[in-house]
Length: 329
Ligand code: ADP
Image (cartoon, rainbow, N blue to C red; front, side):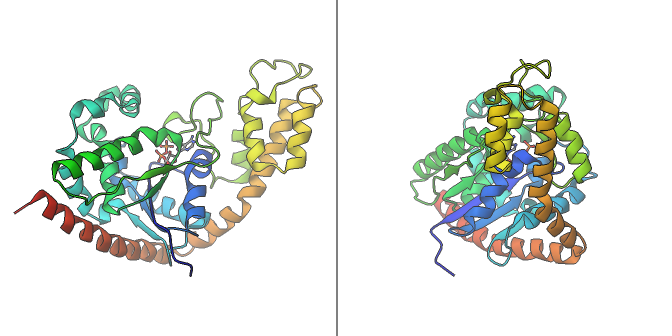
């Protein structure tokens, strides 16, 4: 195996089924970065608690997320895949980092304001501290690179600030400032063609769904809003379906749509049918692998246990340095 050039960390919430935004914005990079980096990927169940009030599905969702990640190409022999709450050191570091975090910085974050808007009845303390827990995760593993969608940019910047505050306050050089890593599609729009694709906005296309369910979701996608009739020429440059065609569909068909849409040679319905077919084809290997893994739940649980043990070893090493820097008695 070639030597790795650094460490990668990222977390994903087990709040439901993974969607195309998660895959194209983050998971694709999780897989690719394994070639060059030592990777640590975490299913962040504690983070999920900030938005999920009913935890009846939490265990099942955590397991399903492990299936998604393994089926997408995470290689547990080299990569550490684990569940956040299995490494309690993160909550200790979260507490310590919260002491170098001005409250106003958290409440000013656009991500907090958006969540507060989405769940005004449940603006809990954990929701405010979400970025501190995320920073704790990233720095606990001394991560150099964090693959995430662009929605997470304020949290990565916050993490860098917390690292500087911690190292300055405790006159230590213990924690590392991470870099964000986006894919070529850092923000995938939902089927509404307006908002970021998200489980919480119910505008997602799930990657593990059946081909028929996928087709139905694709057929609901909003296209160029100015193209009202089939005979109207369309503008692919402002069409969300076309932007996804460019990632999923073979180049020849992309070029054809780019021409035909503009002169009303192809209608939105046919364009979406083509996309659904290509998307289902692209997802076929993932779905087959996921099916095989789902038949081996003991194996999946063993992967997560092994990942947690390896993660705890790194986490404890960092915490020894952190406690020393803070001079905890
Ligand atoms: P969700 O927003 O659907 O609840 P998460 O918050 O669990 O998903 O996000 C997991 C990862 O997927 C993060 O790195 C996030 O930036 C990325 N991600 C989520 N939605 C999108 C999107 N629509 N486009 C690009 N990346 C996304």
